[in-house]
Length: 236
Image (cartoon, rainbow, N blue to C red; front, side):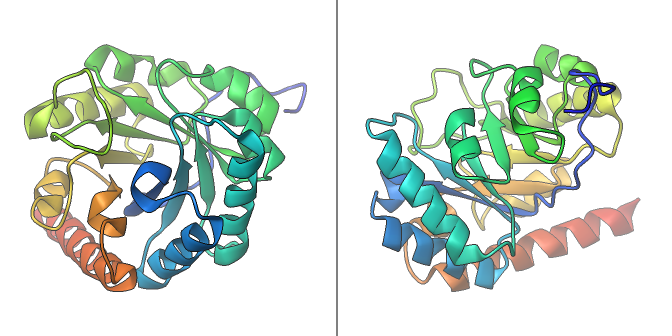
């Protein structure tokens, strides 16, 4: 970070959240070659952002190799982020990191990763959205919106009304320019409703990577998202 930059200055990197694919090791498996193939198929189908997600990392070197394989497979066509682990993101030369509320503070992550990195943050409560004005993040994901089996989440789902409330507070804190995604339990059947509630995109695991063919699933999700965004824009 340049000496003149504030550690708490808002992020400024453009992030396309429309279809945010989470390559979760628990769902997709730990085979690096397989993860790379899934990443390439998702991007070919219209995925706009990828995240490597491994909630418990028993072997950091193996995780690092998997992240590098994913980056090589997509060859810069979309950004590749790492969930939670700033050290792995830095070592893999990933495009950034996604942080939970209990992870490293975004300002500390920014100091380590630099101004060019993408930093995302999970929001679960309205009060957390109120803090965005002073956090150097480039996007936020709100949720869980619906119940999901891909993560052990002690907090109840916020639902569409809860999502809309948190999103409203987030935009009050940071303005309309901060991309806001929705996460948890989202698929073809409810993606349009989530977009109508104010999401700029959806973060998905099972809906994208839970079955083959991944490229076709990505195309279908992307089409549903783009149509819902166009409908929302036309209603304004």
